[in-house]
Length: 289
Image (cartoon, rainbow, N blue to C red; front, side, top):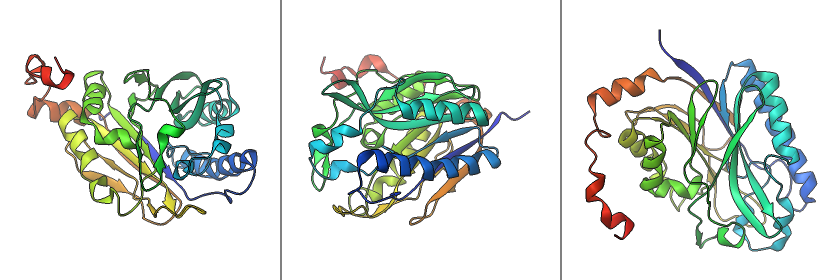
């Protein structure tokens, strides 16, 4: 019998003006996402992921200490607890990307993973931090991740997370495959004219090289006052053959869903024996040894 898991991705535009107070911005974003989460529950979604820094704008378009006030601890912060309640209510695994505070002045770009009974399973901290124009000043806000490439054994499957800029680095994508990931989610904030031509190239390539499913999420619209470019949506799922099996629109808030047959992973790996034929003993140059 096929091992099918219904998964969902949420892509949205801003819920309110960035001039509002940060608690107001976060509250408006949570309300907007809760409506889409309820829709996902009605459609029978079992694993759901939201976009990078889902509860506000992509504030890395500027360097302003104001946004340090958007941090909260994981798992003891209010947003993680809110998601735990929703996960428990809907029997849904939820991947929730947040601006995490480890201690005062030490902040990470993080995604928490909540199991279908509301249990906090752990978190992934974005490992690769960009700092480049136009308007991607992430080193001002985030330390590089220090938790490696964990896999989360959820009720419905083994989930890995890679966040936005991470996707340009195949090494971590490989590590997730070697650690047993069946579905890798990449919550992102990326704009047209910068890396759009790579959006449907790199991640299907990761899916092929590692024979797992990928769920890629991107926000939509222009974010004032910065307007660094159009966040072009087009969130999608691709299968272990690198084929896109579901895709969102460019310019609208929506829930993108797909039924993923996890048995396809074994089927593909039976044909393409990339893990068997790896030669890690020849890759010393990658580690500078």
